[in-house]
Length: 316
Ligand code: UDP
Image (tube, rainbow, N blue to C red):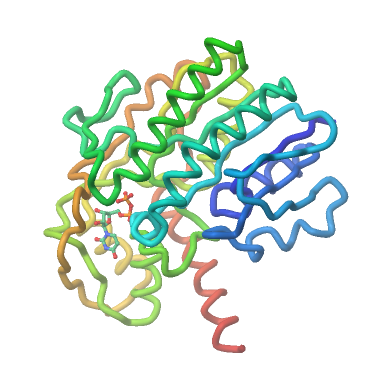
């Protein structure tokens, strides 16, 4: 039975990976310091024999007894509001945390997968973004803590791959959404859905003409699995190439929820990327992967989750 460590396993993407690999028959050790992750995301796994949880900050020395076949490094705050609230922790987990995890990878001779991000492209001057684009990042802006820490994490991963001959993979993850996204983390998908469900104004930042491309979580998890089990060792973009502007996205949420909320405009956060769309030709070629869940279908599934959450809250 393969044995796997997932750092950040109580987070949004991390917890879906825990589920996925438990279902595939793996033994999964989930590590999280619960700074932005939540036990709510993994509590349904606690009864499982092949699942265990360790509450730890990965910037401290990590000791895991026994062998490990795979290590997935998903620990990091991952929303613009979190970078403002936890700038030092964001820098530390991408730099010191990745260093500690790579030390463990070396010790265990495990296969490693780094959760990198489209933020390594910054506010991109090349559109759509391909893996060979080096990006346009402001190192000293509010998002710099995340962008630069992740760029360092990629550099460190490649250094360990070249120097210590580690077996590594890098997923550049674009905007992903679905159940278990955190309420109140400021991300546009939970923000708009909750505003629409509560009949509050939808807060579009700037003129709303900035674009994003949203990938449903089950597609992302499948892409990560294919990358992990492939022999391709360079960075690979994972995301849904369907691009839309945020204003249209807000209108789509209103249409799908049937909400009569209004759209209001708020100031654009600093360094908010103007465009973002993954070029996934590489993933199609080397992983035979592309998203299959439509935006409408994904929103519907996410809506059901948030409706349920709101209902439970009202019953409290
Ligand atoms: N956004 C918005 N209203 C919100 C939250 C976000 O208009 O209430 C915009 C944000 O300015 C950005 C896009 O939606 O242009 C996506 O934001 P998110 O925080 O989800 O992720 P990002 O892609 O910026 O990391």
